[in-house]
Amino acid sequence: MRCLRCPVAYHTGEMCVAAGSEMLTPTTTICTNHFSPKKGYSHHSHVNVSWCFVCSKGGQLLCCESCPAAFHPDCLNIAMPDGSWFCNDCRAGKKPKYRDIIWVKLGNYRWWPAEIHHPRNIPTNIQHLRHEIGEFPVFFFGSKDYFWTHQGRVFPYMEGDRGSRFQKTGIGKVFKNALLEAETRFKEIKMEREAKETQENNRKPPPYKYIKINKPCGRVQVYTADVSEIPKCNCKPTDEKPCGFESECLNRMLMYECHPQVCPNAERCCNQDFTKRHYPETKIIKTAGKGWGLVALRDIKKGEFVNEYIGELIDEEECRSRIKYYQENDITHFYMLTIDKVPSLV
Ligand SMILES: [Zn+2]
Ligand SMILES: [Zn+2]
Ligand SMILES: [Zn+2]
Ligand SMILES: [Zn+2]
Ligand SMILES: [Zn+2]
Image 1 (cartoon, rainbow, N blue to C red):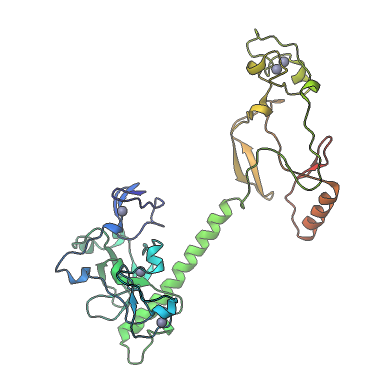
Image 2: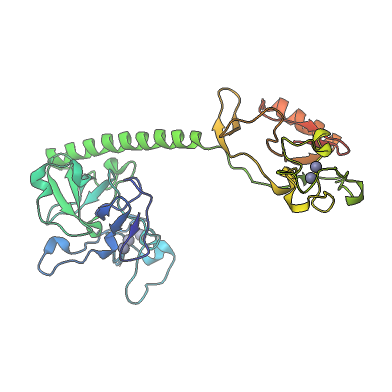
């Protein structure tokens, strides 16, 4: 989905989009960069924490102008910059997202743990509260209240936050409960996201490189046919589909491909599937028990050309060492072919 007003784009759905983006259609949005604080709305102002995000201590801090982050310049190994400054996360375009557990500052209250909810999932009376582009509803743990806020007043909850700087003596019961609830919910969402990620990863094949011609590895000799060696068929250019599947093309019968410079039908010849890479459409699938594979998206006639098998051309020595490696590492999904005149294809 794309922002109508700036180059910002997100994957469609709710996983990636910044909380508070105004959804116009499923693919168009006005992103949270267009939040403009209204004068006289104190909750629209931006607040920074009073401690350093690196060392947790106070002192003279460098404040991000977009989010509540603050740092000692020393802790970031930088000199105090002149003028406005944005933290790394903000410069990288990181934004709070739906279902993030965050710390939020409301009025004079302390930083409080909350969850960002999607406006669709909140009570209607909260939905109807006045809010601007860039504002999103948060659900406060402990008190179970909802409020609309924006990125200038929230920062991410991190693993272990309950026990760290927010654990003070004499904290109220509600806050204590809020901390416990936040921790539980944080773990829950983290596990959900991890499970989903594993699932996603399993649906994609491991990274591979798409190659169009065989790749010789090591000392392998690659043979290329000489045009003078390529047989010529007797098909006539007047045939409807010269050298085609239904024709009596000699080359085709002997399982040779015609060469555009040799075949009497030149460009009209229909026996150049390798040369022209005429493959049926295919898709990558996860097979049951046999790893990743390629299937054709249509039926293929008996004897019809399917695809060119391409891979690395390796010599005997390399072949042996690979087989040994596969055996030692329990890898069973590999294919080797021996091809004429050249050693092996993996
Ligand atoms: Zn935008
Ligand atoms: Zn510091
Ligand atoms: Zn920031
Ligand atoms: Zn022919
Ligand atoms: Zn031909």
